[in-house]
Image 1: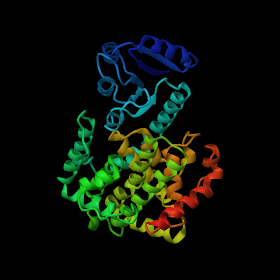
Image 2: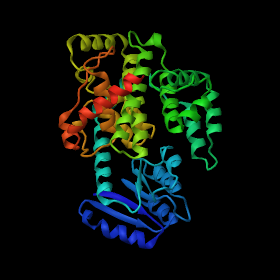
Image 3: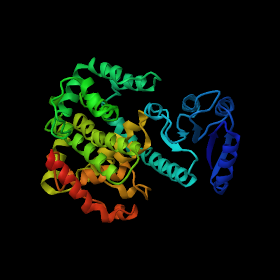
Image 4: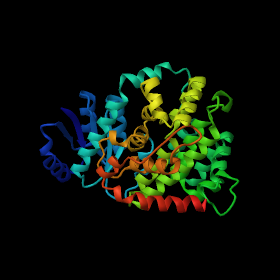
Amino acid sequence: MIEILFVDDQPEELALLEKSLRKFRQEWSMHFASSGAEALRKLSSQPFDVVVCDLNVADISGADVLRAAQKHSPQAIRMLMSRRGDRVQAVESTGIAHQHLAKPCDVDLLEMIINDTFALRYHLDSQNIRELVGRLDTLPTLPDTYSALLVELESPYASLARAGDLIRRDVTISAKILKLVNSSYFGLPVHVTDVSHATALLGLNIVKPLVLSSGLFEQFSPKSLGDYSLNYLMDHSAEVALAARCLAQLEGASPEDCDNAFMAGMLHDLGQLVLAKNFTAQYDQMRQHAHESGTPLDELELAEFQANHADLGAYLLGLWGLPAPIVEAIVWHHRPFLSTHDRWTPLAAVHAAEAFLTQQKDPLGESSGLSHEFLARIGRNDRASVWAVALGAETAMA
């Protein structure tokens, strides 16, 4: 039985939710709290697998309830519910909430999210992935500038100006962001020389992933990566991120899913960087073999390490508390058919973007192709030609 705690200080809404969830009584052990204080008592008395909390609980904020859940049940899936239009994005992005649900709660969507997340956890908890991580001498850490940016965004007085100032203080990350922003992929009408200007032009939902990816990538010296090209990775990541966001918008995805697709695109090959750093000569040979033979690089990684770069990157991002849709998009971007998804998500966007942009082979040794099995399952097999035209037009403009 999955132990789930629901928190809402509106008695009629809590009663309606309890009634609508009765069909899950054989699978879920459900607990209900009508105040933040009651939720804290329940959280301190027993562990939970899932905590679903209204954003606007009167006595204690929903975010604080989820922080308590993080403390008492660190493995719990943490979800915020809110009315459409509520400004929850800053809270969501801190990692306190793994998912956001609109009120009134769609119970079928809730079931799918819980099933998807548990499938993801089961995969990332595998012995093979943990053994690979245990073999690594060097792992990246969450960049300080990104952490400071999240704190600023969580503040009720958050501003673009202060966010830009925070980023500007990190000279290395600022330089990498400006290089990406001024590349042909973004197609800005002016040359940008200041991070604050970039933030104003692109918005924080674009700049934030650039801060995270740049902060992670700059922890690796190009000289320590053998033949692996850090510059190519940065350019390729930006290209996939923009393409994934374009496809998500084309498919009518929510703004949150579009932003998650962009973030996942920027980080989808982080695991390659970690493998290149820790197994430099071996990884050079593996990529060369992939390039010459046409064997997908992730298959060679699985044969050698019993886990691939997608597993490794997703494992690290999961540890850092990034939202589940981003982690899912990364772990299964080459093999989306292994997911439980039967609908459009950021995973579909990143998978399709990577497949179209990589085409058959790329200089890093990867090969990729669309999974028509997966596209048929999510009802999008007839959209591939539309996506190809859209991305072809976008790359032509670049």
